[in-house]
Length: 376
Image 1 (cartoon, rainbow, N blue to C red):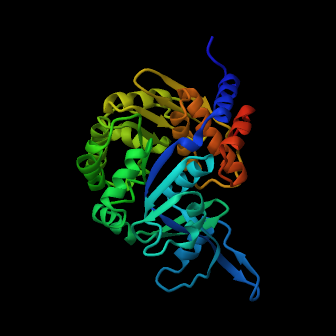
Image 2 (cartoon, helix red, strand yellow):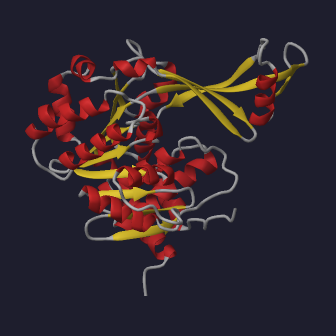
Image 3 (cartoon, rainbow, N blue to C red):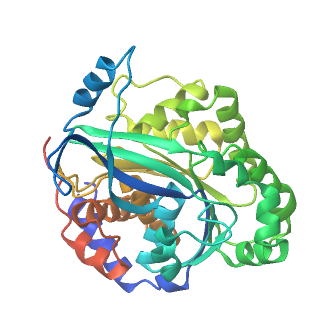
């Protein structure tokens, strides 16, 4: 008889509570976004009061009605916050308790104020200005309008000039985790990876280190670009233990790029899909995390875990980044695969319920009696 979900939770909780998480060093990069949460005005009542456009369909109808003419829309910024896969993941890792250095486009020459919370928890080194996302929020979803010109400055020359070669070597030499996320949005990432391989990693001392990668929805990149990035992960495996993190959609995109057969029911087959991708790439670990749970595979084991899915989250943006932070923390702490999945889904579950990134102590308590997934 296999280990039950509650037994996995109890074991993970004990190990997290007893862990020396503050001894773990991580370097994460490289994106950075200032997210503005925006409401679109439908009717303005007076200087202080307005009715907002409630649905994307309602806005679409307004825009379609303006064809051949012109139209004006008032936008109200209701919140400005830290954004980007890297900063969110780094903030979550630092909240858990790791010693984190974040390198990325978070405002240059001065760090943008939205990243001051991250700066208070972690060492932050900026190499470029931040990108901006105007997130138009509606009852039935969001329209994310990105301004991405600053990604062109996230490149190897700026890393070397603004971090410094000696400092970069020192940071990576002492880190147990190197996290490189949002490959899709960063056009120079393949070149950065290539230079890390040729100029840095070959000179670092050997040791137990992980390289975590999140592609971040590669749909807008070409298949050739994606295949080149995946091939490069095989080269990293010679220096670091590679973990490739994928959501359900991304797992399908990678499956297609690798020429693997698509599953008839992708969510039901996530454990098999993780194993097939890992075997094809010959990397350390592949983890696939749809909203209701997660599965992972290494060369010697695979596991699946049901997370604490909640039907009406307080926040959803950043849930995947929190899962990634929890899962890699589990691997770094020596948790087994099922326990690491528990820690990943627990970190995400705590965050979407509270809009707070949990500490290791909060996570251990939450996981001890991890809620079952709610029914949709």
